[in-house]
Length: 221
Image (cartoon, rainbow, N blue to C red):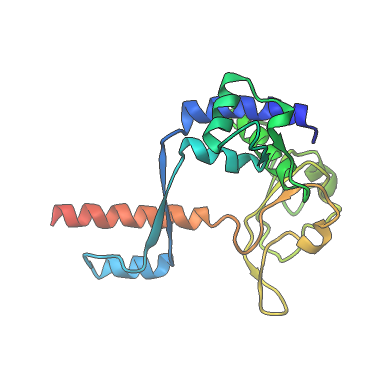
């Protein structure tokens, strides 16, 4: 990704960050839903199975979303960088791109996040979908939930896609894996959620629901 394109994306993203995220806080919860549910059934006043941490979207955090490296002679701090983006004063001399390519990946994610509210056409595939690989390759965002380890290989996907692997399987080596054959994706220029460590936010949502139930129960007692 060239710097001129990066500036266009980061400038627009900074505006949206200020409008929708700045100073907002998010509570991340983690734990085993089965253990939490058991504690709820026992009507305990504390949920020791739930752990959590809080994340705040401060002005200086925007820099971390971009992955760029600051030129301290031109841009003194993360807040200075953020303000330059907001004022549309950011120049190619203010930053450098990471040599490992991570900057391009992060900025690509920023650009895709900005499109999240636009209309999309949803296609659902199943076991009798004709020529499924060609159908899947047409998509911009692919959500895989087939329930079979490694069933989606590189013949299904193309460069530039965002692939969300929802599958949870155990392979022959006894390790957790998803429905996507991640080894075959190394040559593909796409964004793929890992398994494990990917879509655990669904589990977090369940834990949050349990936490709210527990809080309401204690208030009503």
